[in-house]
Amino acid sequence: MKKRIARLCQVLVLSVLLTTALMPMAHAYLDPAATSYIIQIVSGVVIACGVTIGIFWKKIRVFFHNMRMKSLEKRLTKQAESRDESI
Image 1: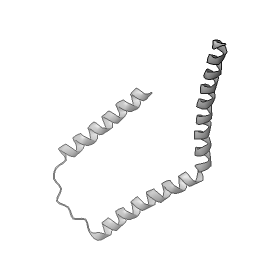
Image 2 (image 1 turned 90 degrees about the horizontal axis):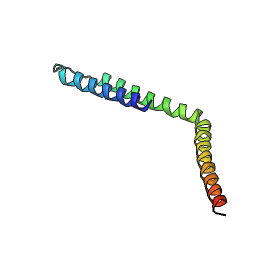
Image 3 (image 1 turned 30 degrees about the vertical axis):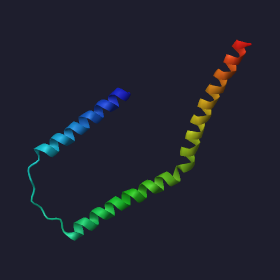
Image 4 (image 1 turned 180 degrees about the vertical axis):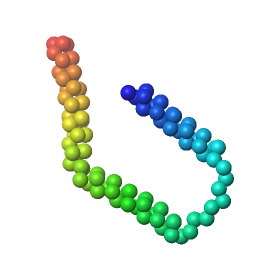
């Protein structure tokens, strides 16, 4: 699965680089209204991400807490087994 994701990322980066390199030069003008619209879009995305994280914060925290507990449990089990073997 990791290889597929890595391959997909490589293809994506290559396609972006080729598209950027082969794009003809554009002589365009961005007026202040377009700039403020871009700022509104970016701030809207940031706020939406913040709200989404805020809504699911408890689930996210519990997920990572459970992962930490599982790794701690495995480590303690290995320590207990190694002590039992040495006795």
